[in-house]
Amino acid sequence: MVVWTEFERATIQDIFSKMNYDVVGPQALARCLIVYPWTQRYFGNFGNLYNAAAIMGNPMVAAHGKVVLHGLDRAVKNMDNIKATYAELSVLHSEKLHVDPDNFRLLADCLTVVVAGQLGSSFTPEVQAAFQKFIAVVISALGRQYH
Amino acid sequence: MSLTAKDKAFVKAFWGKISSKADAIGQESLARMLVVYPQTKIYFPDWTDYSLGSPQVKKHGKTVMTAITDAVGKMDDLIGGMSALSDIHATKFRIDPVNFKILSHNILVTLAVNFPADFTAEVHVAVDKFLAALSAALADKYR
Image (cartoon, rainbow over all chains, first blue to last red; front, side, top):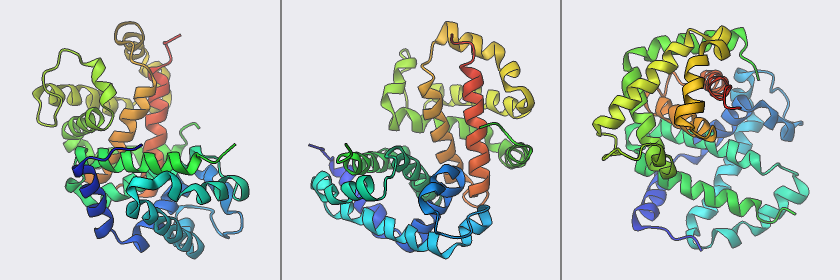
């Protein structure tokens, strides 16, 4: 059972209520494909991923970045039941998409960097801790149905 | 994942931009690490204050960042360049190398917070690779 402090709950709701999902999602995914290029293995049909500029401008990457971030929204809205909320998505990532669950951490690190860049100094160490705890719970839930 | 000429160029150029704030970056990176990964406090058992404003965090952040900046000039031979520091980390401090990765992550976050426009994805991958190579060099003498 994940226990959230009042500060953590408020921080997560605050960050995501102010976030532009359609900007942050594409940026986080593009950054992941650039910083950890082996993650491109899951996007063979996305066309031109040859260099950073191509990835940043790729419309399929952008579209998928939005999908991923809107998927994260489910956890934001169900913080007390993230495990159950992601059961189906976990099966999907394991059985159909065959994503190495370590890659969730790589995308999460890129998301953290993008959010840090957006929030600047208001992304204090305490806010960072709450954000990373939330992301860690999501990652754990997404990896749960792998066998 | 060795450093290419392009990586080294990106790291050097970016470090040129941030060097005037290096001490503060070291301080903030360390403070973030101590808050977000509280288990890292075990390496500083006699400190009295682990917060961003702590004089101990400030001093040590500066020490670490000065060494990292120095390593930017040694990218052509990090293992050789870090040899002495690797010795003391191995025999005296005995810091588990997993923590190098943790501090590296917090350095990246600090850079993103303070230089959002300059810390592009291309700079990010180059700096990440540099910090990984530096961490490996620092762990080189461990066993």
